[in-house]
Length: 297
Image (cartoon, rainbow, N blue to C red; front, side, top):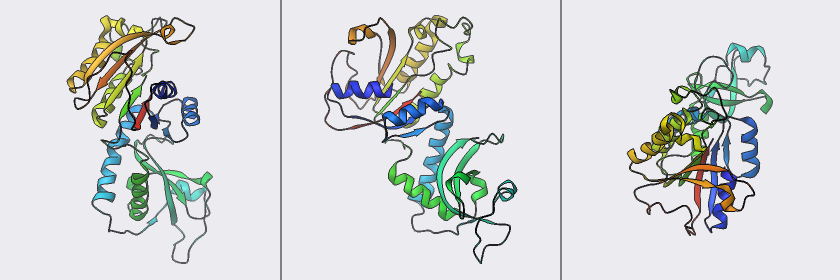
């Protein structure tokens, strides 16, 4: 969706840049990165991404805003599982039962190693090891590695590896349609939100509410207006209205835009109260300044 949206925006003289993207599908994430090499693409669930954004804001406040002048020791005692599989080079002042952290290379929220313990975790590059030996470690286990955390957070804050509130101009996304589409004969017609795939609409709107972008664009199949008396479509529209966004919902036929097919899709536009009124879908907007977008799928 982000690729098509950016191409359409460019044709309408709008400079739209995909800065961040998240998708739970690995192949889709690779495609996003291929089409948007400048973007920070994350292969994870959208609800984990939202939790990460909240934790990242806390880290930036602690290590960037409040602690720029403070330094910390940078040692970390490794877990037994790491010690069994590693034989790193030791410094003279490093004891035999310790591994030394070289740097932190990534951050996530969740359980990337399927240990059963979810939470905020950093990918650690160990001294004397290569990138293939990086491990995900919980932040609680890095209490003796505050200097490395501070260095990673400051660097990530400056390069904007994750968006903070006020950084995103446009959020666009297409929550999964498998639980909505009429082609699914086993969809939950009585309680659509009991389907985890359909609940991604809730997560999408939670991300919008947290980041407060200037504009919002959500796409889905037309059955979002049919299933359970259109409860999912009404929910999405009401969330935007509740957040004081100007909102417009419409159905667009692909054939009206040059494609040799008759495919209908529902689009929900939202504009922040501080922005111009939401215009008709056929009206072109002209802006010269680049917009930063976040794609959620």
